[in-house]
Amino acid sequence: MKPEAIAVLIPAHNEEELLPRALAAVQAAVRHPALADVHVLTVVAADACVDETERVAGEAGASVLHLGSRNPGKARAAAAQHAMATLGTSADATWLASTDADSAVPPHWLAFQFHHACAGWEAVIGTVTVARWPRVPHLADRHHTLYNASRPSGGEPWHHPHVHGANLGVAAEAYRKVGGFPALPAGEDHALVSALERHGHRVLRTPDCPVETSSRLRPRAVGGFGDHLAHLAAQEGVLH
Image 1 (tube, rainbow, N blue to C red):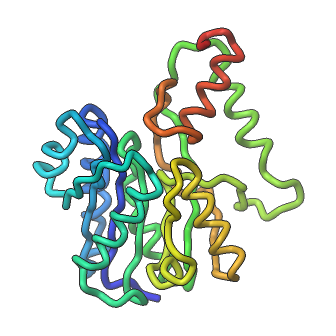
Image 2 (image 1 turned 135 degrees about the vertical axis):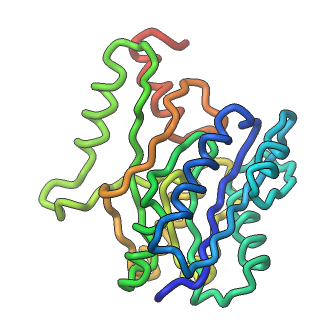
């Protein structure tokens, strides 16, 4: 598959502070020379926002959806549906790249996914990193120990077991065949990847293009990476 179009999907709930950085990073990734002939559309699903998230997204040139479900699964699915309808390209020529409003993708992020899509992979599942840690004793070390230790022993050196909505790409055709992101309040990314693997789609799990994400301990979404960090912080007696 050589994608003719790429949609970047970003769910956002009250993210006026961090969204500008996320969108600037996406825009830098769009300008990669490898994507010169590819149409890229960025969709921000503003979900139950009461701040300036929609204005910030619109001013940055993103296509903005107004939602009120406060449900990350519904938000990602709505962004995907809107993107495919707007792009007008066939599903077998469209790639869906998912990230988060509190994350910053590297400049080669979309080119990396595009390369692997052209090589026949139907999904690319990446990892995340944190650049600025909160001042919580041992938090970063505890996270890294658990994150790296969870890799299956004896597996391929590039393989990892993690799934993050902040760093995920999938061919639109495969996405549609497995039903897309389910309407879950948490874990919609895991459910999608599980469905792809269960149905035999070619899924690449690779740590080679990590996305930098927030280390905030009071996350917007329940059950995600922020909750993981909050749990570790609570074990250190920082959060109760």
